[in-house]
Image 1 (cartoon, one colour):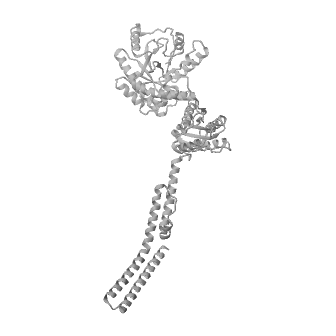
Image 2 (image 1 turned 135 degrees about the vertical axis):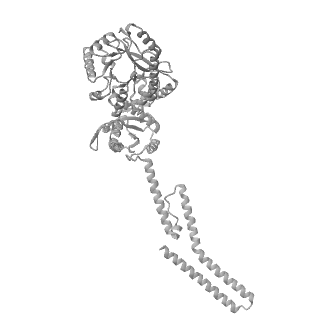
Image 3 (image 1 turned 45 degrees about the vertical axis):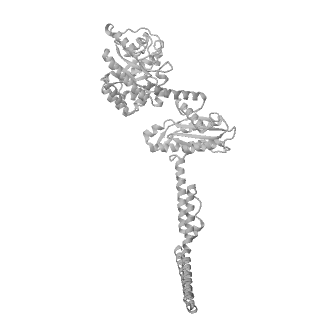
Length: 573
């Protein structure tokens, strides 16, 4: 069609030019016959020629002038893109003069609009669950909070899956993504079903990152309704998920914050709900917790402790206390255990129970653990210079075990000071020992074959797997103080301890009883078959200088045998 129009245009221009030429010829011929004077003939010829040229120029410029205007209009339309105009159609003159170009511009803008919409969707929605992502969620909550009427209540719920990492580790990230989609669907169903149908704004469910989800309820009747939603969410996620023939139990910890009670901005509400969620997780998970000012204060102290731990390590505020271990058979010193102490800048000395959990959660425990290894190596090197060194027990955090290079770090720390691994005992808590991977057990077996001793600490407080105990590279088991606390007064306590000792002997490990406070307890344990004792019954934890003085005095005694005497105090390491 465009081609035929172009041909028609050219034909009309030829006809117009021909007619102009013919008119010029006739005019010139008439002037030649009727004008006799040469100047008049020349003037007539010039006039005829000029007329002919003018007609030809008009014919040639007809299409060009229209195209120029169309191109100018098209340029102005394209420049409008700078202002974000991707929807206006091409100018009418472009459609008339260059319809093919107009059609191409329409197609181009349509594709650009589609691409922008797709990019916006990718930027605002989670690709795994199709839920709004963090960016969209925050923007939408900001908008809804701004529109909230005076006195209206809203709620923010922070949902974190409890055992999702185990699914990713055992089944792979692809299966983990499928589980996240199933969780997202349950959240949608539960929240939508629980909210009052009369609510003007729909609940907003989003995935923030990893296994973290959040729910914003912009119109709630009160705390009762919010608690019901939170409870149903925890119950719904606690139900098993069927995933490729496997029944998966994950559970969820839910934190709840109310607006305006706990904040009126998205930042304050998310922070409050996050703090409440961590409290729910600390209580074992699978439940919801409401934000309170007490939780806020605990969180503040936790953050301050995390910062103080990092600074304290840099400033050298940590030290080790050493408590001797004695053989119940020979009365000889067979070793010691190193306990961490924090000489806090406020003036008090803090024990691990007050800060280790925080150190593990914030990750600084790895740096503290490296420092402890170095200090223990120094102590054993000094012990070798001042007397006959014995084995030194070092507590190991689960976070340290999770590091692939942990056992290499142990080897390096003691090798740098020429301390043999036969003087090193690595103590794991019962719960940490039970969750060790096959790779970690193999690494333990290897360092044990090089001379190190492996021990389980605080046995009797967790849930031990007997088969795991039998397969572990294990040398010693330390009874938890709560097991032996009443053995000198309770027959039931003695029966329980006797059964535990028999079990430990069955797996080929020695028994260490700690926190022993009197000679009666020590005598009963010796009769039951315990090999080693430590506690206030003969020596409390001491600083390094006191320890070496105490050991020196003990070794100068007759036969290096220690007498057990009634002790005082509480041996809380």
